[in-house]
Image 1 (cartoon, helix red, strand yellow):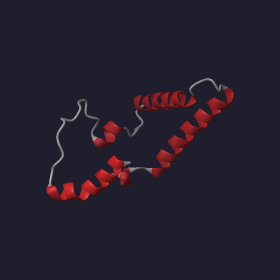
Image 2 (cartoon, rainbow, N blue to C red; image 1 turned 180 degrees about the horizontal axis):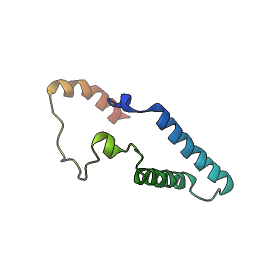
Image 3 (tube, one colour; image 1 turned 90 degrees about the horizontal axis):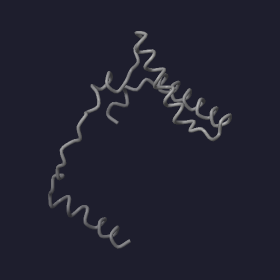
Image 4 (cartoon, rainbow, N blue to C red; image 1 turned 120 degrees about the vertical axis):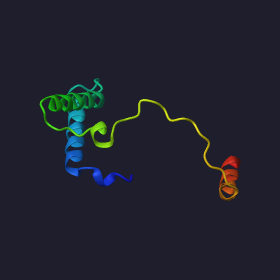
Length: 97
């Protein structure tokens, strides 16, 4: 949520709107087809075509440096007696429920 200011509202709104309209339109005319899946696929293909035509299409990779291709190394969270004391009553209440 720290990068929410980087979102271009116009692009996000128009992209989501077009995808939603496409999915709902498909649902109306072809109710047994997976409308949302097809709409997302079409949006991805349009984005790829626009990028190949030389137009800039903001992606996760271009905007934030890409998605890691490995999983993070598992690690235990930091432990302190203060946190343990703060969490213990809620944990006990949840365990009793």
